[in-house]
Image (cartoon, rainbow, N blue to C red; front, top):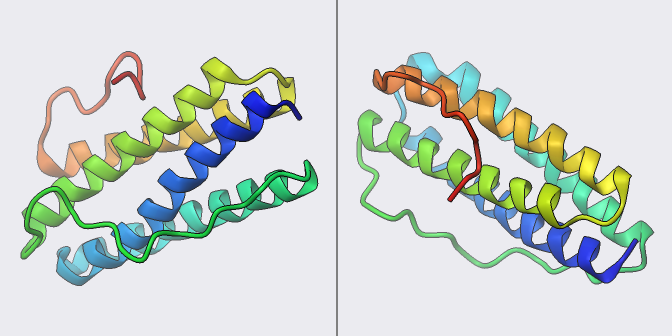
Length: 144
């Protein structure tokens, strides 16, 4: 794994750390009927985080720890701001994984980036649909 691959994965790992933390905040304020998808999406981010850590370790790369906290960009105090925060989280992780796809030297790393980006796009569309955004999808997920 190249240094570029390791840096791209490290950046994506930081986004996954933030996502796992954020879903804890989101779960505290989201509507109760969203609990199932929140559990599913949190689990997906944990799995992706752990796989990224494993890939970095297998390559002999440094694995940074998570930050102590990841504050939301605006107050989250009821279901609508919670869903909007989830949109931000999925957008941020999509940006990070798109960057992996664009920067990766290794086909395996690029493939992992494509899979992660696709998963982020589906989760983002789910939250956009919940918020009533039309269209719920974007042509190029992860494009800043």
